[in-house]
Image (cartoon, rainbow, N blue to C red; front, top):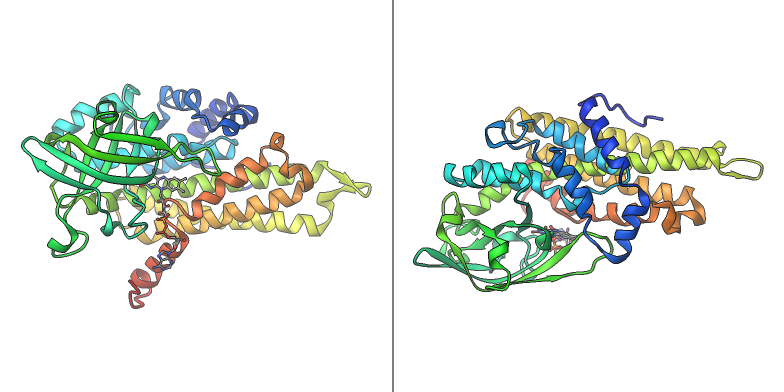
Length: 387
Ligand SMILES: Cc1cc2nc3c(=O)[nH]c(=O)nc-3n(C[C@H](O)[C@H](O)[C@H](O)COP(=O)(O)OP(=O)(O)OC[C@H]3O[C@@H](n4cnc5c(N)ncnc54)[C@H](O)[C@@H]3O)c2cc1C
């Protein structure tokens, strides 16, 4: 039974659903248990061209907009799969596409579109800086034709399963620039060459299977040819990509929300206690109905943000609001779904507890709810800045 209108991109949605049906719950449960990367699933998405929808046709992609990409990730999540292993390829590529030189784009984008190269890693967060990105201390010092990178990153997902990484570094110390956001630069790091030659990657085990890692840089040499855009303007390039990232992650939350509402409704229809389906009790029905309403409302904001983005209009506030509403709706739906399943909600085989853990992430990453509220308060409502 449909829980919200799915009218956009019906053919893409149908193909994604068919692909996802080849990767049912037991596949994900087995990987989750041992925190193994879903290589076969990511391979199937790549082969079907779903990860290159945002790459222009001139570079071998299908040149579709963010609306199509959100439909793909939503269906992945609604099917019980998880896009976290591969979604970065969609938005990380935008930094290269928008700010890279023609030589960089022709060298990398066609190979990313074909699946020959994986651009899955995005290195911004540091333990000492947290959300205050201007405080990053990973530095890149110019030495002839190379930058020499030193420092540490934390929570860098998929670094062990990627060939390339978009890396944010400081090229001028914070106390020597006019604005704290100046003096940062973006480097395209070839991980195949870097690991063992100045870069060490250490996995971090988390409450979900997200292949996240800690990175240590000790005199890693990166060719100056791998600088994206201008030295010192990197923070702006990263911010540019964040709207796409937030909208895509919000679409994953919408998919999760629908998954939970679908599962809760189905279980409430079938499970009989006291001689009748539990879903006949309004105490069980209403929370599921409320979760559906919340997901459907959030979906509208996410669709609006994607439409603005595809139209080339400013969409920062809508992207943030969509991400917040969608992550809260998916978490509320997760809680209801677990409750409706009673004890069975905790059983690994039902797949609900895994998705419950997975969807909780989105209120913290890629941006936490408080920081979204702060954006809305200061940028939309004109309230004074608190930091
Ligand atoms: C599984 C996982 C995968 C990730 N993958 C990546 C990745 O691939 N690449 C990458 O670069 N990063 C990644 N991240 C990092 C993620 O983007 C950050 O964890 C997130 O942005 C929050 O930053 P933080 O953890 O440093 O929290 P902090 O900045 O330390 O904040 C902690 C808490 O305090 C709140 N807070 C902080 N300042 C304020 C304030 N002024 N007012 C009100 N509240 C405040 C925050 O909202 C948050 O709830 C990942 C994180 C996780 C957990």
